[in-house]
Amino acid sequence: MDIQITPIGMIKTPFLHKENCPIQGVYSPESIGTVELYKEHEEGLKDIELFSHIYLIYYFDQAGEIKYVRSTFLDDEEHGIYASRHPCRPNGIGLSIVKLLERKENILTVSGIDTLDQTPLLDIKPYIPRHDYIDGASEGWITNLEFREKPTARE
Image (cartoon, rainbow, N blue to C red):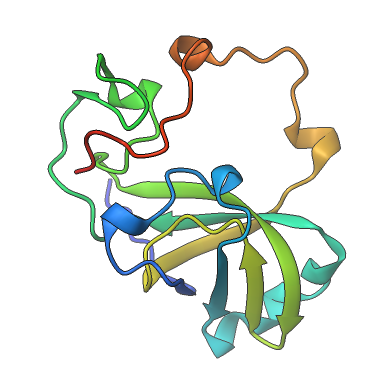
């Protein structure tokens, strides 16, 4: 099976290097970025401004070596790649929830952005609390971990 995915736009942020990029947008709600859809996809944004938050689905084009078991930004213990949000993944697909601040034609201004500048955008979906929130969901191995202000390892 051959799967081909073509970016629909570009995510622009102030983060030029991995070391400066937030680990998760929830820890950096003041981080502002823009999501610029290519003009041929603009029509698909109809009514997007009615949502407060959106999912950005993107490609980790600057990720490093893929390792199926590795330590993460939150923990020095090793975990399977599918039990983490590490960017070095077999298919390099990333997912972020951001707050939608404004739409001007094909450009969305968002806060809580946690991607590198010029990250290729693959898709956008609305965050819908009645569908996306799961009461009582488990946090897995991160349940008792504290957030690290400065990660010890970022690859």
